[in-house]
Length: 68
Image 1: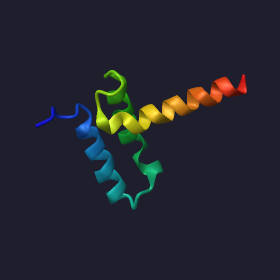
Image 2: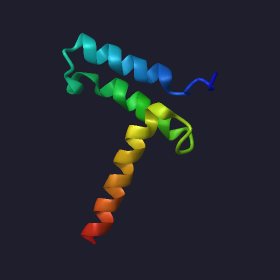
Image 3: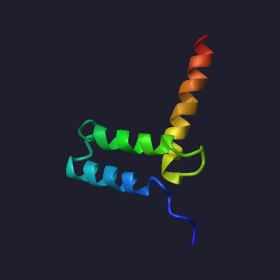
């Protein structure tokens, strides 16, 4: 059995929040920030649930360097 994802709890909280709020992301910003905070505590690749945020950050960096 693979080790438990360190940010799984926060990912589940996002899903609960989205379901409770008809998938309106704007109503779940606090929970999303908690997941981002958790993801920032671990090295890249450590948390599967953080992979979307990691990809988003890479795309931002690529865009910034392209604009220079």
